[in-house]
Image (tube, rainbow, N blue to C red; front, side, top):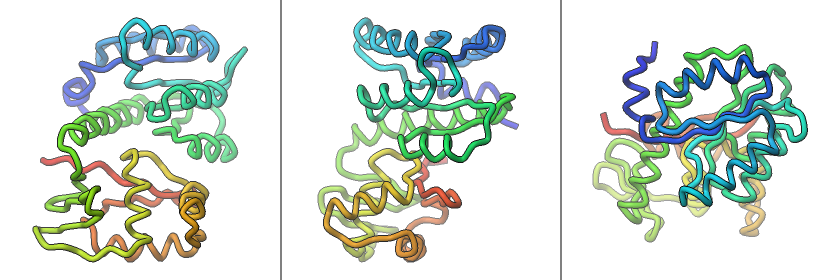
Length: 247
């Protein structure tokens, strides 16, 4: 059970845009969101949401920290909204809600880069847990910007972006060229799921050969060099680097 105080500690300074065409669900959820977020805006379809997203940036000078959106909506659905938001801000944190357990939706949205796909009816513990994870990731992103070239990939595990080197407990650990490519792709956005297709495309762009079978082998070898559970596999979909938080 996740305690609300723990979540609020990380979300109280954040903003969220909630997009849902079902009025009763929207109003009820907004009341819950107000308990956790500094700014809560809501709207009933993707087109209004896109306009509000642009207006928020124009008025505040920053984007919403989180966008929470349904898939099935009139005028502009959640997939179209996600695509258009990523055209504006490719690093936007987006959580998708859907009553449909359809892998076509899931894979399409994960390939776009969403944070999480949550089924309706909403399990609010799952939703709050997702908020906590995303908020911590935002904190880490801000920390990485401040600390410069080094990424913390686990306890006493540092990746130097400039030198393209890994150190564990102060000792250098050899990385292959393919491991470096993989690390740099997945740490572009911690917590984001990168599909096998995303990974293969990145290797192809660098004129390197890669396929799904070799990705699995690569991850298996890399895990032996990194902290436990640094890389999470999403079965049949892809992989993500989990943010590291000091206890």
